[in-house]
Length: 303
Image (tube, rainbow, N blue to C red; front, side, top):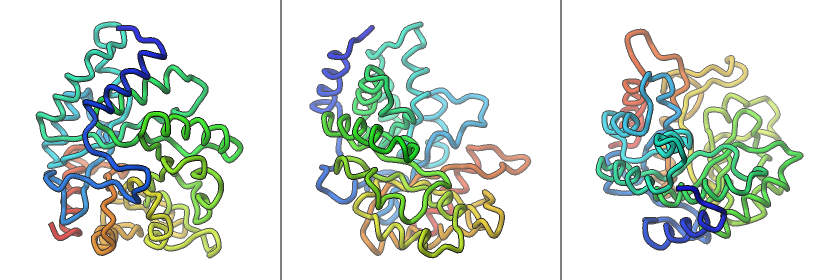
């Protein structure tokens, strides 16, 4: 099933009208999770980005569904590569397989709140229309990508804004250690209210310096930008002074144990997604470690 630009747009609109479930308007400060999810903990929904399973030998869509169920997760940030592989199994990219893909996740009780397409907002308009159509057909409320270079803020920001506004979906920017307390004071999010933040709290902590003007406490950062945050990536990293290491949950400098109660108290139901990046202990694997991370989150949230 080979589609042109108008077909991509049409599929996106049809998905919004029929297949798309839930979501928040661009005027709302947060996007609610699902209180019936198996990983909804007293007002906070914990999921994971499927990048966490990258070390597993098998990691196609069917495997990802199984891993999420084993890890007691009810929601995922799905890497676009997983979708692309599923749609191309017959030799061409078959958009007609999207309903089957969504049904497989739905039947397992696993929702997809984000699809990660790191290159969205680039020069390939046809690919961007495809990415939006995929996300909406799968019920995702948001597409995530990396923060662009400062020199590309306007170009990428405007392209992403047009996509988000035209298709009724959020596009959120994910940070690595280039972020500081002033990153989002600039123009990047100003091109549309549908541009949001995918805040990686661990990377933020790993970038911490002694310059108080450029960095604030990560919980204060969330307070400052709470009306722009769509989701938070959970990992435990140490500060620069301690080597910017990736450690098991509860062993680094990232205030993960305080984060979930903080969100509960504030009433901010952001999606909180585990991103497994620490070294997997001998005898374990990514599925077991994501389960451990989820258990840490559940206990922190009083679940």
